[in-house]
Length: 585
Image 1 (spheres, helix red, strand yellow):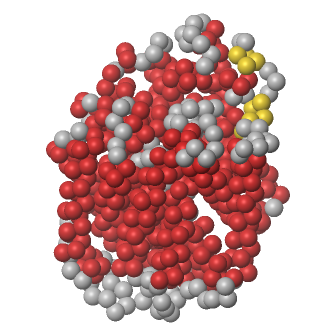
Image 2: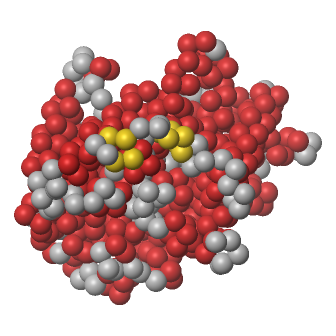
Image 3: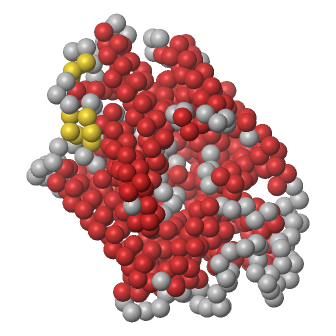
């Protein structure tokens, strides 16, 4: 019988962990991992890319007149999506740059080891939780379910997959071309389409009053929808068009400079996100309790039996014996402890406590991902920062990084496990695929981050890095207290925190559809108006297409957006490498 509840019929047993499936997963994982470094830093959002990888792999082999089975494709998307989220696991889109801004930049080798060990721990936590969340409770894990359905659909309707792949590739090429015309040597396109106005004598360029010429940002709007995009634009307008001119006019900020204004605006923005995250977590106290309960007796919990399988402990079924899993766990923990001490001066006890907390909070994220398709890894990191704030600024960020990293890989792995369960995939093949993706991603994202940071900076107008600034602001506030904030920023942070709390509470009522997202408003405070406006334009386009051509939109918008994001991101990474090596100025 099939494992779990209803889903696509299990295909006949076929080749799965083949060399071509692994090679395709590694290649696509490399591309997605590199692209996500730039996307995560630029916008604070990123996509695991499981559907993108599935479509591209199938289309490639179909175009080569070769059959590519559903189980092979599942291995490919497992490896690639595991690699794609490694920018979050290593922390290069948030805590690692925040530590660098605080004067604790880590060496490349240390970051690679950090990512490898934390990624492996995330996979192992997901492996332990799979029996309860994926099999016993059959939680939907919507991304994993959708990926499985797309793989099955492509296997039965190849022409549709080829159309989606064509759309994705065309979007990637166009986005890369736009990036070249905008940022390349010729600079034929402007960075922003600015309004010919000034507010309180501050020119539009300083306040970024306009719309960015960016396929990546337009596509982000296609993916996040009108509510989140509108909330983000609202935050940018409040911060940069209303509050910033007032700060300059009243002498709170002495100079109308982007960096000086951002140093003030980051506090209410971070307070909004932090208050909303903590409020949402408190409202999900039942999930926290269930998450702790999920961890009880994990070592002896048994998976639901499938055809031909004995009801043996899950670690034994994956590895033949529990010894390799145990050794991998011990080695990973030891590496995290050593790297945390060597790179961030974190005591072994603090690191071990962070890892223990990561086990609990990762289970909370896992259940949330299963029930809602959203994993609140940012909230988990923020909670950890608050708990370890008394140990110092660096300890606060590094401890939070341990938790958010483990939770990120745990959630992504469970999405992949859900896809594999519905397809009847080998659990051993998926675990190996996840671990391989961790290795590929760690080796890609670290040098990519270093190149991007060297070329564009962090927390600059060109690279806003809202997540990085939020991590740093939270650590600074916890360590230094409200008195350490710039003039009047403490009052603004308190007001923003109350607003975040109220909006989050109201979001659980019938008013939710009419209320802005406090998290997105907070990101908007840290993001120039031109960038948020481009995201909002993308969301408007999505609404128009959904109303006029709903079937076409449903089939093509994810490919269109994924291609454009990958195209511009990859071009930006290549351009950053050319700048960093001195080939371009």
